[in-house]
Amino acid sequence: MDFLDITSYWQHYSCSGSILDQLDDTILLHVLLPLPSSDVLRAGAACKALWSSLLDKGTMAFWRQMLPDGAALGSHGKCSDAWLHVLLDFARLSSYMDSLRQFPLAGETALFHSSEDIDKLIAVATQERQKNTAIECAGQPNIINRFLCSLRFNEPSVISGQSVERRSNAIRFRWKYIEFNVHLLLAPSKEKKGMMKLMWKCNFNDLMMGDEAGYIDLSVSGSIVAPSSAETALPRIRPFGCSDEVDGNDGALPSELPIDSPLMNQLLHGHGIICKLRVSLASMGSAKAVHVDQRDVYN
Image (cartoon, rainbow, N blue to C red; front, side):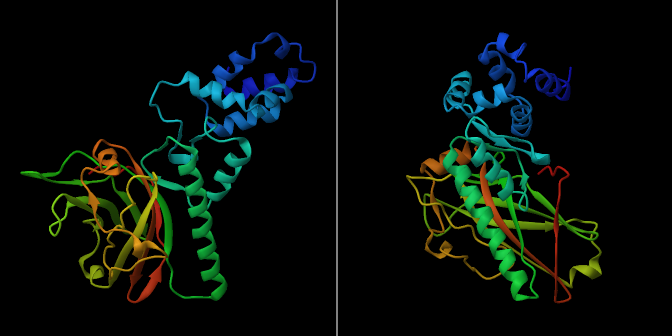
């Protein structure tokens, strides 16, 4: 019996309660825990008795107790598969899905350990959407492609003494037949000992025509959205292909990160980060709209 059969079964018997009244709520909650949040919402909509249990604040606490210590409490992967009902009540879950509809997460599956990071993501997605709306209303010709991406650093790619560089997974973008990859580089600061810096890096697909390359102008900028760090200010990420421009309050952020900081420890041990990303691509002086190519990119 697949999920649609189960929800139909619940919906059929929800009025009489003849089946659900005989089931322990904990059995249903065990079944629902690993399902995508969209399916949990559908199940609740199909069954009034189940919906009552889902609205109970104790349900999320019960689900948390079922998870191993240190496990992620939420995730969002490709194809909009969100597993967030352990962290968010259904009003906030709906707000999250609405906010990210125009800014789907690209890249690695995002893992969440606190609802605060999700709230930041909702706020950033709302701000970016408002910026796009303002640009459209003003009739400005320049196209700024805005995205949210989940990145995770790989094993060290360059080792020299104590100096280690690491690069993240890449996000592939496309405009017509032109493809390019965007990733983050984490490298030791040459100016300050014991400090690391983050930089956006790009490379074009080798199949791009050589003559076209001379007419392409690409710039990338953006900043970290999550995880938030109470101990260390989030560093500003150095842009690619443009002046060291800043967005909003980004100019007040430090450009380096101490190598012994809690955030750096997380990054070096494979914890992911979520960034807002702005991509500007112009061909022969004309701004172009690019989109994410969801095919996996291996570095």
